Length: 124
Image (cartoon, rainbow, N blue to C red; front, side, top):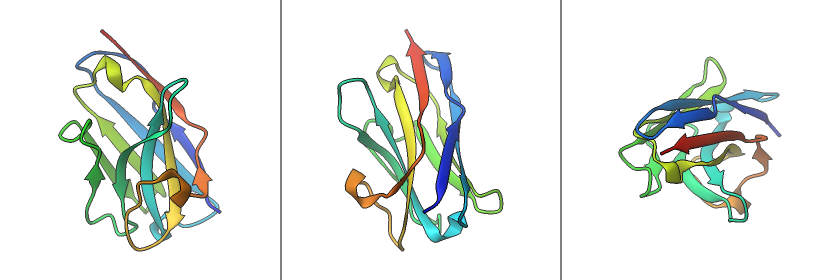
């Protein structure tokens, strides 16, 4: 398994931006499809953004499409989630997840490697 550590969360006003990072260790990230999820207290974890190991295309939840962008820097073994035009409803704990494979994946059971999460809070 690959070890993942998220960073970059924090408190931001509505309309602001944050960039989350997901740093990998133990394995080369280029072998893994990467996906971002988020979870609010008492709610199920939901899909946010996904990218295959090649990084040549991305897929987003409708709620973040046009505002969020995921990317990867395999040389740094790091994946990013750029979040713009943030809304109060984006307030959640954000997780990155990894799994081997040639496609992108959006369901929780597809993944066996997870980060610890980073809190994003958007104030109105």
